[in-house]
Image 1 (cartoon, rainbow, N blue to C red):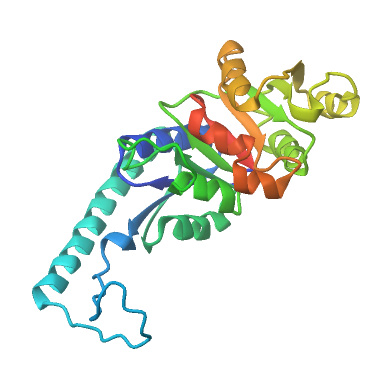
Image 2 (image 1 turned 90 degrees about the horizontal axis):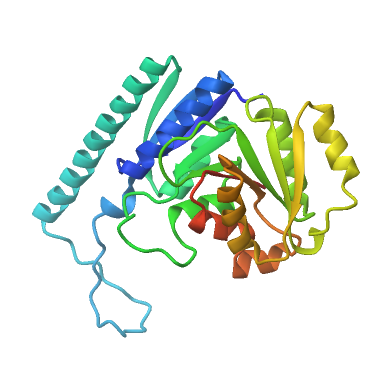
Length: 285
């Protein structure tokens, strides 16, 4: 049972799309919603300046006090960002009230990944935008807040790439990993009652359709219809294509494949989906 969702807000259009998706899920799941705005401390901390050359390898460093006006400048930045955050949260509260969803507003300061991970410990699902305030920069490598959260969040994460969708049909990417099994159970216990149209796509070493009677019986036992598909193509390319072909509203996947260490270093199916999917993606550890 889902009692509360958490959604990260940074004031960007993409984060408000994520909020709208979280609001839709909270309404249909009859759960509460926690909106979290994190003032990025990297923007508000006064730079530390040391004496010595750039290539000075000595261990002794002498801190040079900064001009008081510079300190005041950074203090003003922090206050302005906090006020901006409060305004963003007020918008979310109004939208939630119109939808009849109970909402809690949280304003924190710190490193966004750390603060969102901490806040989502008291929630069941974290919802975030595929890109945030830096969406005008093209990202092709791991390192964004979104991808950091996919790897480190203590709760399942929904990544939202665009406008809100009513989730009815789910594409489940199954590779036989422990994370895939966890994702299947999580779906049945949470989203199955609102999105019972289920497409199970077998990839990697599990890409043959036979031998999955137990999983099918498990789904049927919970009144979920399932269609099995398989693909020998590269999952990072095949999954988005199948999601579009089948008109799915959500892609469900495990955070890691069967080779967890290599996945972490080279990039798992989940990481590719975070970058490329045009529909929301639910990642479960």
